[in-house]
Image 1 (cartoon, rainbow, N blue to C red):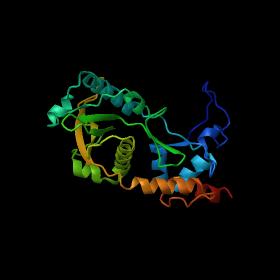
Image 2: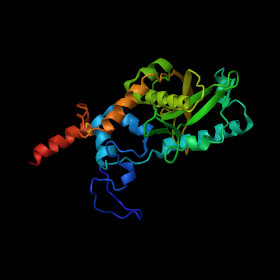
Image 3: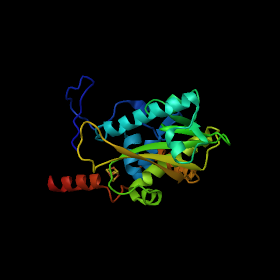
Image 4: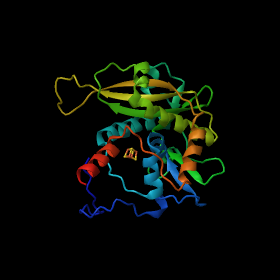
Length: 269
Ligand code: SF4
């Protein structure tokens, strides 16, 4: 996509292709702590080369516009769940789904944990200088055993019936599962007991409505997911190994962005 560089006053400025904030660039074998967010870890899993170009070389990749409609469902859901958090009562969706033993988790840091830009769940990886972070949508609690339940809100507009098996087996949802596995891992590392089942709260917009009339209807579905964090330690170790390497790894051969750049170079030669 076309992404034009603008300064803080929204004026167009020349794009250099490089980031300038040195704290966001890792120097191989540095001793200082360095934060890696869940999103950057996902980038590493998708394409180690792009991750390296971003975190170590400091390239400034084109961005995408914000998903403000999706964010709005998140904000509105947060308000509902916060009201139940305050009263420590089950949310209406818990009652409808036979989950009356759940309540939104009450913790002094819950707002920090949900702030993916400035904080998030946070833990040091083993005895390394890598600090792993991840801004979770919500955390619920099983009142019968005290364990925490990871929750992630998803918005979509799909005409297919929402059903757990087909939802989770879709290759496009692999990244969603990584997200939950990572949050569960962070919570475990922070010393919490985590329930083996997490939930996606999927809000599916009704595309078959008769008209817009200033509103959009959503069907809300809780999709249970049995997370697995056992693979994360090994992958984070690989990621740190790469951060300390002086060479960039190979690109993902399925990536259309790199294929596009290669074709441009050929055509403009
Ligand atoms: S293959 Fe795609 S993701 Fe990887 S470096 Fe190239 S543009 Fe980035």
